[in-house]
Image (cartoon, rainbow, N blue to C red; front, top):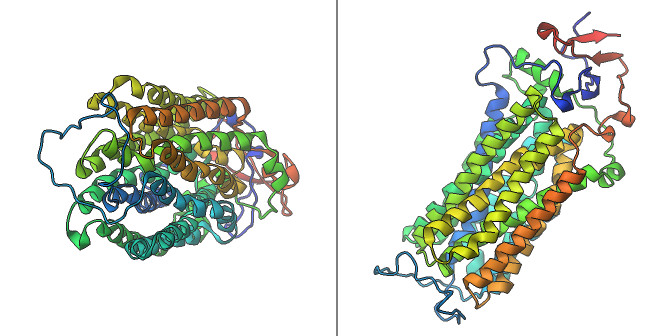
Amino acid sequence: MSVVSDETPIIYSQSHVKNDYSKGTGAVLKPPSGECFGTRHFLAFMAFLGFVNVYCLRVNLSVGLVAMVNDTGTTKNTTDEEACAGPDSGQNTTVKVGEFNWDQNTQGIILGSFFYGYICTQIIGGKMAEIIGGKRMFGFGVLCTAVLTMLTPLAARAGLGYFIALRIVEGIGEGVTFPAMHAMWGQWAPIWERSKLAGFSYAGAQLGTVIAMPICGILADSDFLGGWPSVFYVFGVLGCVWFVAWMLLVHDTPAKHPRISKVERDYIEKSIGVKERMPTPWLAILTSPAVWATSAAHFANNWGFYTMLTCLPTYMKDVLKFDIKSDGFVSALPYLVCWMCMNISCNLADFIRSRGFLSTLNTRRVINSFGLLAPAILMSCIGLVGCNYVVVVLMLTFAVGLGGFCMGGFNVNHLDLAPNFSGTLMGITNMIATIPGFLGPYVVGVLTNNQETRGQWQKVFYISAGVYVAGTVIFVLFARGTEQSWNKPNGDVSFRNNRNVSYSVLEGDNTANGAIVNR
């Protein structure tokens, strides 16, 4: 047995493992002994902060729009039975009048315009990240959005068309972020750490929402930098600061990182394999039921998530009658719960899989089903509790928050199916799942235009519940948890490179796990 030097271009594949890893059995490659915080964990932390910025930049408009719009002259058809008095109804409050006379339809178009651009760069972002590296794609995607966010007040005052165009271009820039990060995790995440590393980094999106909503509410209600414009200036600057740190401290692969230990690099590369450049098997990907199952679950999760993300502050203001500062804090609660659920589900998924309690497929099925069906039930019941603010807020909080369990389900399933093309797969599913980003707010605008009632909003919740159920059924029936044949060169289950080097895991021998042998 001879160990190959670091310079030798080796190709590994999960198929070389003798044990059935999809069922959680057999020997497991173990992390470096005594390791507490490795380079891959630092990458997860920086990515986490990146997604905090991504969602601060995305959701600031949801709260800012409440302060931007002047709805004092809008006719609202409500009945006494459906009008909530508001938790602050007996208090004297000063209400600021917004600058813009935009009705609910127009607001729905504005909120959804970001996603018209966002949908365009999903696949290309994932593919480019696989070719040139995810570091640049992710970093410049955030930078583009941050710079344009700072121009939002100027564009809004220039005219509605300029404002919508700016939001579309912001979406184009930010559209590469999730696929690019998925491509990076295809290079950095060991098999048994996929859920928790990817899940932790993506959970930054939820924490970003938790941070942005209350702070936006405070800024919009203040006189700092003109009130609502400060919402866009503050988070734009923070995004630029993060970009500088990301470009200086992060590297595309373990092999390119100058400070990674040899032990950690070997552990990562022996677990996931050193990638071979292969042409993208587009036909196999687009005809794969497993890919479409992941897409369906992604679409369903995003329908409820984006509908609430963009429209929940409006619901809190128009139906539950919260003032704008309370609006921001209360609207953030669901995403705090979602952030906690994402981290719980990812660690739980890896624990279940690595201990062999369930196969990878059944782990994804169970966790994903809970993450979709629990919110569906809660959303269906919101209309039954009337104006009981505590119960309504709790139901909304957990209806959105429990969706975080999907992170241990469909959201990392791309890495199970094809780590070589994980960026492309995320691009495809996220492109499909972006449709709710502009369709959801538009549906809300149509249903609630001049009819901001509990009855009309309950229709919004019923639609979301129905989409959740449909996504659950499709994922359970067609999802897969094993590496697909088209992820391997020529679809060959037992290939080897031109140096005749292969990878084997020696069952029961922890000291020799991942040994490289000549055949």
